[in-house]
Image (cartoon, rainbow, N blue to C red; front, side, top):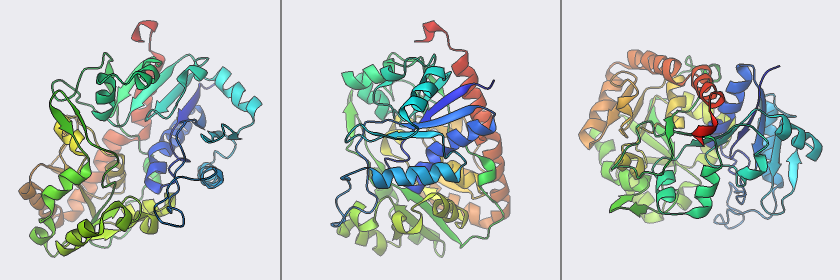
Length: 397
């Protein structure tokens, strides 16, 4: 009998195309490896309304129905219509699996993968022999722990093994937490991403302008993408006639103040709203596959922390055969760069990376897909993660 695995995430809470791909590729990838897989969403977080309500600024919801409906459609799309459960943070009510079926899954599961700290009460899942924590937000996770956030430490400490997308975590750039962080990266289900599509000749990305406030510790400050993006304001002028487009999370005019949005447009940036161009699973994939390549900055914290973090989104671009020109976070230590994947730290390096991709696009496109196949294939990434998880001993706690 195949091992039973529970995967957790934020698909229902944040009904966005990119967020969905982040978590559903864990579920689908494990199914294709032959595991008996269920998806649970029990984050304790208030669900998010994509459209912002009547005012366009109200992103909390009054009930969970739309979020549950979105999750149900996603699970059906990937052949998991009877294998999911969602607990609404507002009233504690479950949707999806019946109480009896859900309890049976928890009692018989061999492994739980808590992706992005999406389980509020891991002690409720302690019947599962192996609880695995996967940190997808390196530096910010470690800072919360090092600053003494007791409730968060209790959640992290409840797990048997700890992985991180920060493949190069080290002091003094990242504070010590007392955990042994094993490297991992985003799994990509390769045959969901197609390389034969024609593109529209635009470098694009999908991003959060600022997810949350900066954090500081030991004299170091770790900020968001807004900090880094402003360093590259002049880039469109330097790469003309190449077009640069960014889909800012939410509606562009909500995420960015009008003054900042107008300034970006004045500098030659095209700013579009992802809830219009890539709101769900299929449109997000089409947006990436219709792009010529990606250009993007990273969170300032990832850059300052030299974490080796690499974006789930960028990995999808690579899988679609779309070259990626992205800000260096230290990932050059673990991923090949120079062909298909180009890293930059300065404005001049960003300019040169874009020019290089345009100058020999077919070769960079092939190399992008090859990197995805070698380094992000869900079969490889998840096999390694699960093998380590099942090998965990009691002393690894």
